[in-house]
Amino acid sequence: MTSEELQVIAFDIILHSGNARTLIHEAFKLLRQGEKAEASQQLDKANEAILEAHKAQTNLLKEYASGQKIEMEIIMVHAQDHLMTTMTLLEVANEMSYLYQQKA
Image (tube, rainbow, N blue to C red; front, side, top):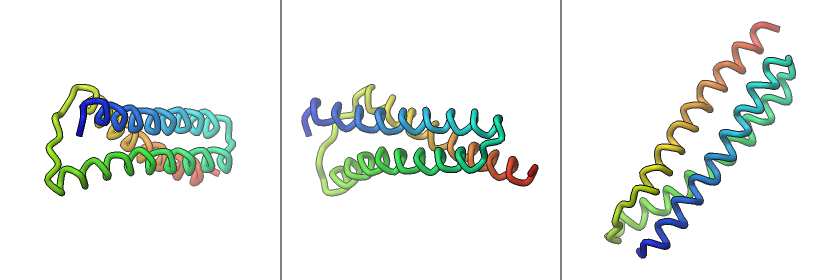
């Protein structure tokens, strides 16, 4: 795998996880405003975006598992960090959404 190919994958992960993060923050705002159904929709969209980022990551892992040599670059470390923190943020947002639902 070339450096350019790895960078494209890294930016794909960053793009989708960044989109998910934006959707999650929109959901937080909607929850504060009492718009629980709309917040839930945003969280569903965020989950879809994270799945897209995860697909890019999984494809990279498949190549590695098949014996493809992959030189790690700092942009990939950043992409992985971005994805994992966004996944954690989504877990927190889903729990908060549940708590807001109980408050109704």
